[in-house]
Image (cartoon, rainbow, N blue to C red; front, side, top):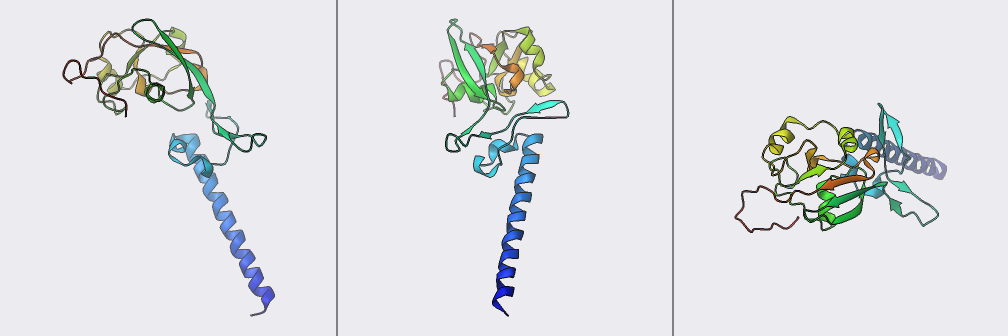
Length: 193
């Protein structure tokens, strides 16, 4: 086989492999728009995009800045947790992260005994602003069942594992109840996982 033909076959193989990688990246982008799949995929495998609107909802994704050497930053919102003593802790929460995860990452005492599996009410939070509460998705039947077990239930109570950061929740204020109901022995303080 002449050298030229061998080179063309190699080039063609490289072009096919490149096209396959591009199609794979497009498939991952499509999945990340539809679900929270993007948080399970290594950030380097997702091609950065600007926020877009699809089906009336804003989807935010990882953005890369070439000026700072390609460091990736996620869009974040400001959230304030108010503990039972009235002390406030303001944090930045990435879009798509639950308030339970954000609290654990920032050493805020929000229990979450079931680790966000909707099997307890220990991540009960109270949304302090009705306008923000109205911007949340309706609680599911499973969440309502667990909220019925929560200590100090209010009209704006939610489970922290079900409150997901999105741009319209910027400035969200969450009060932590004075106590939680857990089936563990009195005095037991679980550590976040």
